[in-house]
Image 1: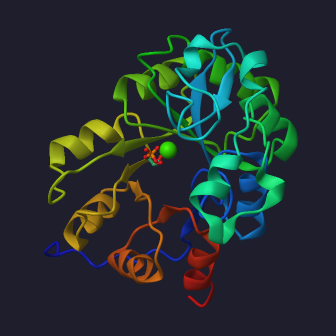
Image 2: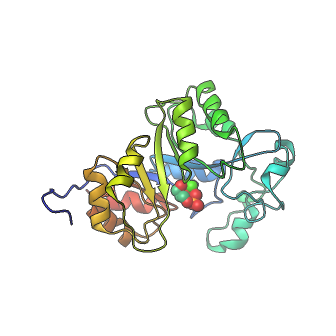
Length: 263
Ligand code: G3P
Ligand code: CA
């Protein structure tokens, strides 16, 4: 690890329900978000896409094909059209061990639906997806955050796109931002990269696969939060906590709760 620095181990580990409790229920449905809450997830993670008529919806992919009975691009359909789709049956087919007849026919939620359902004091961890495909996405996100008076102390906005995060910062400097990072081999972060990210973000969200203790300690010792994604087994959760992460994204928030509750 870092020389001359005491090892920092974080006490309160943020439990982020990734796409809701998406290991147990169809991702990005009100049902999976509710389940995440029940399983002690602190945050609901929401990926955003935008419809043809400019509405923000909760969906991971730009395409409808994987998680609905529709086909093609989200941006080519109006919200009214997308509301006809079944966003749950695919899960029952894919994961028979967790299938539930109540999942069949679940609708795609808009961000507005989610805010209405969970309210202003729920903790939301919202990702601007494909921001280059959806000009104005950040502005619309902020408009809804303000309209629903979402608590900005706890709101986190995340993106792989630094440009999208900088747009958010320009629109409202009080919004807390997290820079997502993706490593394809052994993760390394330079002092320059840390300094650049600290200009606008309070934390980083790297894929956990290639992380090591030195990376995590360097990030936290520089005052950034670190929330790796997407960690779905207890052994890896334990290891990352031992290395000093401040939270993590998981499809199984109940497992992370079991790991953290004794600490
Ligand atoms: O937002 C954290 C993590 O979800 C990023 O990857 O592809 O699952 O959105 P992805
Ligand atoms: Ca995401």
